[in-house]
Length: 266
Image 1 (cartoon, rainbow, N blue to C red):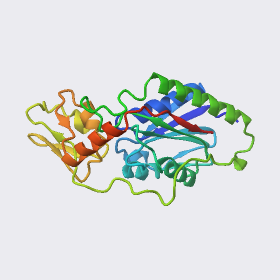
Image 2: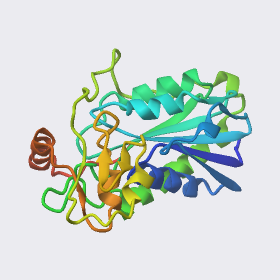
Image 3: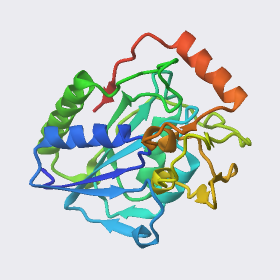
Image 4: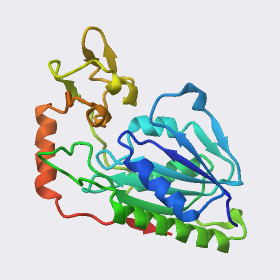
């Protein structure tokens, strides 16, 4: 049972989840690959339906051990028709906790039986030059592992005969899920003196939290601290300066220096 049409569905503000699902797809050597990028708001994407002829690879980041709430809301507008899937979470070298189980539950309820799962590492959103956390991940070894995972998925698909009898893959996690990141007034900020008003930060913001007058304006309630704006700013005018977040950044740097390895379940 080999699905020829590979569909990639991901929420990836800093592109780490996108790189991993693309690596998995490359390992599957499909006839066709299409992308369903959930990162930016897009009303036309709502209620998209995938067929039994598709195979979907879902890739989501981990924020505080959970899938980001904004990503969950967009995921729930995607539907399958007994469409087999692989699920992947990408975390910043700390832990993925309940995120993989949460993703499995969401996609299974939406009509996507998950037959394979993985947890990969990406550079943490809070990582910077002074406190690198998972810097450079996914690296070449991660992509090689993603491609090998894709090959194992193909081998499993070729062994399957009846999608109605497929047992969902078992993954770690607990239910009820742990609490995610609590609401706060934290947000990335702009150094007005360095800002050139190029508006690149607004183009990449997943929640539309960034606007413009004679300077850059950030809606703290909408900001999800993905730091896509920080990574995209050509003049390095955007930064995470909120003191509690800086404290978390140093804690992560001090306690999670040992590189984690990808985990796969199939």
